[in-house]
Image (tube, rainbow, N blue to C red; front, side, top):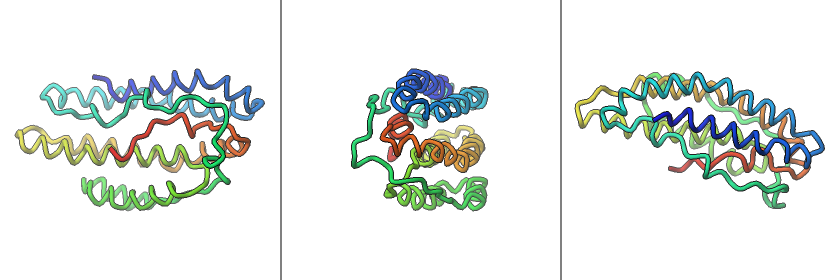
Length: 210
């Protein structure tokens, strides 16, 4: 029922459990990354609860809004102390996305165009050898939510139900607001990752493609 909140709370638990092992392995260098990550997840809980409560009216009519939008944290890779050499990032790179254009497209509920544009930036970042795990995660989550926005809108239309269009507009705008700040976590995680400690890299479940 509270799918988004559960995803956030499970992430907090996972990152809290991994905080000390990362700290020992990095000789304390990872502590600011873990602290900021967990804090950012904690402050997201009220927003997640708000979206879950808003989604209840759709779920009661058997429209699976949020049911599939957020993956289970059990899919997160298992903990390892060190990167495999081929996975180790070479440095940090800031990836820009056309946020204002995406905001406009979101307000128009043009989910196909939203995905088309964001996929281009996703592929660029995915192919990069840089430290960009959190950026990729937020972009992946945005793509996944846009995918289910289209599906659930079509289901609502077919059944003559209230459209979740405005709900998904708000959800995707919240995602877009997190894209620039996601790169800050990648930036401070980069020195830790360069030492071979895979913080963030192995702490986020696969989200896209669905």
